[in-house]
Length: 152
Image (cartoon, rainbow, N blue to C red):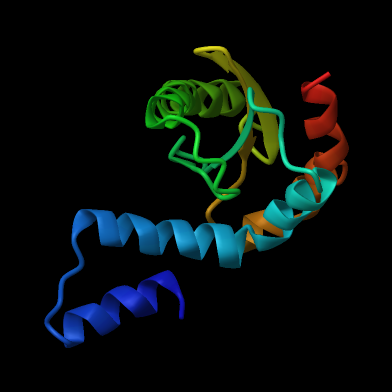
């Protein structure tokens, strides 16, 4: 069931989801529906899992960050990663508009070092049309290899 359908269903039944439930529904929609292909590519590129200090998160165009691979690192790492992604997102979009170029956060990777962890963030759009656009597909074509290279 889609994210919107789950929320509507909850409203019809009179059960407004708690914030944590709503966040989980959104994560499930993004990680297991919309971004499923990209999440699967990363997962298959690391069949033995990640080293204890390596993390891959997925972030939307607004910087909201999700642990789609269920790495389960300390929550502070996810929170700090999201903080930085959210700080960069509006500036990257503004610079892109001014220059007429594509935002660095559009279908791309960023790297962070947080508390001894090497974090790679995969930035993807929330809209299916943008995700399937030729520009996005070109930028994420070698996503798994670029993620592996980030940990070298």
